[in-house]
Image (cartoon, rainbow, N blue to C red; front, side, top):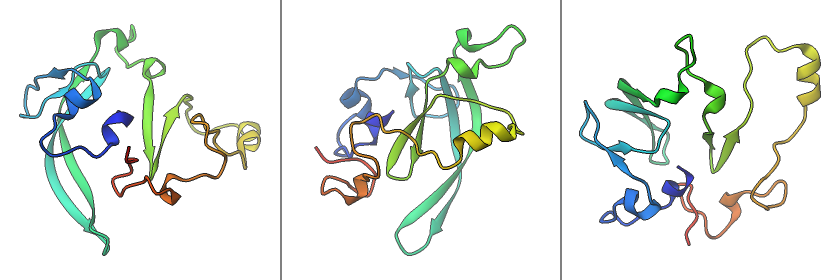
Length: 143
């Protein structure tokens, strides 16, 4: 997923550019990522402009779920621990490698208080891609 965050020419097929397979959706016309453990087909509900920076919040409606068979537990739930989760944090990405239910015990909260995320990309603590010449507004870095 993080490779698709780059800026591509509008004539490029991003699936081909990042080496991902396409799978036909059942409800929407756009293809989904064949290798994704979970895929959601969505339709557009609304686009809300935000501020003066040409930014938008996009709301969609999930119309179909595709969940790989091996991700179902015996009781029909999804085995969330088996999914390699990637998230976007403004100009950077994160790998989610823990899960919990609330409320967390106070001693657990105390051990995490003030802890920073560790960088796994060899950049120094406190570094931000926004401050680099290679960064672009889409959040990708220009190669």
